[in-house]
Structures are given as structure tokens and as C-alpha cells.
Length: 372
Image (cartoon, rainbow, N blue to C red; front, side):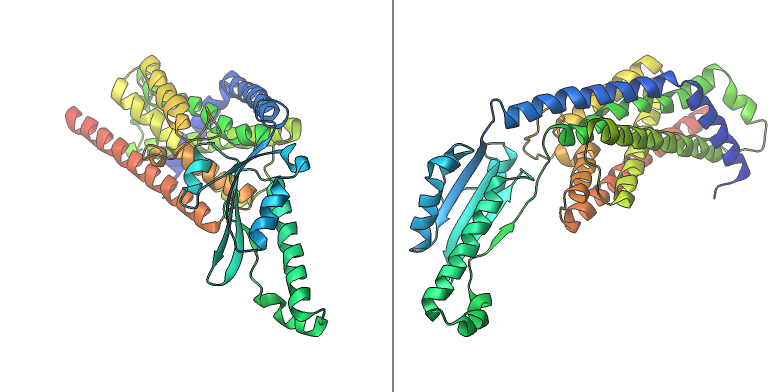
């Protein structure tokens, strides 16, 4: 329960945090610069430089005449100007090829159970291939219907929905350039603010604040809870500021479900705060704690979320990285991903937060027992 004593600690912490205004200002400015530099480099690579062509893999197992016509369409010189096309075997692991960055888009064209179908998996939100495959589908459906029904529009209309050539996106994937780094770099840089949680514990001891506070009827729980809530809301506020400025100044896309985005910001801020609190209790040093925060929050976790490369292969380490799950949820809500992705990402963030809270509680209780 949020008591008057907890509120007192909360306000005390908030005021202290905003007094050191140079810390959030430097992080906001640095984050925007990193987003701009990395985002611009990535966009140039993808649009005008090394990766100027969309890399497309094609698995074509349709029956005649669709198979031949589909191959002919992608053999045209005009498409080869914008696409780098490779034929693949039907047993290829599509998701793995996309995650490893070998292809931007993969088309799977099959004939199964008497039906032709085309599936498009892509990590390009603006993939050319989706439009191309959709147009092929519509044209093929129309031609087939007319030929089979000899132009009889009444029969054509009745049977149209039974025809099977369809196109869909299986995975919408990640954005490119500024939109990509606008999320992953922000999550990476904000970890540095875990240092405020370190000060909330260690600085209190050096200035003898805790003993003075404890002369009042305030429990240890009220002190820790008030500090934690204040730090979480403070970091969340900085995240909102960075996202807003990145959108207004750099044009980064944040047009998703704002409630989902805010939930991710709060959970991620809570995890970063806990990282600072745990490192402070273990190291008893501001300098050592900063090293832990930088090593884990700004290097290790971001590494497995794609902060150093847009194309990463998911590993077991990815699932213990809050950056990985926060990124997945944010991209899903901004770029129309599945509800399953959002739900799973939020669940993993909750689990990581609970585990870290349990670790801090164990350390805190052992400290109390040692002092008795």
C-alpha cells in the first residue's frame, strides 16, 4: 500500500534525481546522436550502398503453368535492378535464413492438396516482393477463372473464392534505418540510468540519510519501495522524452498502441532500476556498479537484441535479455505484428522483473540478517 511515508521517500528521491539534470540531458542528447548516426548508416547501406538490392530467396514448387510463369516474372531485367534473387530448395529453414540476414525476403510457392499458394516472409516492411506477388496472384486468379468458365461472369463470381492462389505476410519483421535504431539504441543507452538506483542505496549510506530517516516510523520496505517507484517513473519519463524527440526531430516511427508502448517503458525501467539496486548491494561501490550496469545493460543485453547488428540469430541468451523482448513488443505494436508476439514479450519482461526482484529481496534480507 502506498503510504504517506512511502510518498515522502518518493518525493525526496524525485527531487534528488531532477537536481542532477545534466545526467538525463546528456543521455537524451547522446541517444539521439547515436540513433541518427547508426540509423543513417544503416539506411544508406540498405538503400544506396552495399545492400542496395533487396535479397530475395524463392522456393517455387507450384504446378504448371504457374511455376513457369512465376519463374519468368522474376527473370525479367527490370526486377533484377531492384532485387537480388536466389532459388532455394524446399527444405530450407525460412525463418533461420531471415534471422541470419542471408535474405530480406523469402517467397514460398507451393502446390499442395490440389491448391497453389504463395507465402511471403520478410524483414522489410516496405518489401517490393509483397506487391509483386499480390499482383501475380490477382492476375493468375482472374485468368484462370475466365479460362475455366469461358468468360461466364456468373459462374466466375460463384467460384472465385474457391480458387487457391493466395498471398500473405507470415512475419512483418523489423524496420530499417532510423526506425530500427530509434528503438534498440534507446533501450541500450537508457541502461546507464540504472546508476541512479545505485546512488539511491550507496549515496544514502555515505551521507547517513538512512539512519536519520529511520528515526521516523518508516519501515525498510517503505524506503525501498518509495525509492524504486520514483526511479522507475523517472526513467520512464526519460524514455518518453527520448521517443518523442526522436519522432519530432528524426522522424522515428512510434505510431503504435501507446498503452503497450508505455507498459514496455515501465517494465524496462523497473528492470534497469533493479539492475542498479542489485549491483549496488553486491559491489558496495558506485564505480564498480557502473561497470556492472554498462557491461550487462549496455553491452550484453543489447548484443542479443540486435543493437550491434539488425540481423541476429535468436539464442537462449536472447530470451534472458529484456532488450530483446522489449524490442519485439515495440516493433510488433508499431508495425502490425501479432498479438502473440506482444503477449509473449510482455510475459517474458514480467518474468525477468520478478526474477530480478527476487534476487534483490534475497540479498536485502541476508544483509538485514547479518546486521542483527
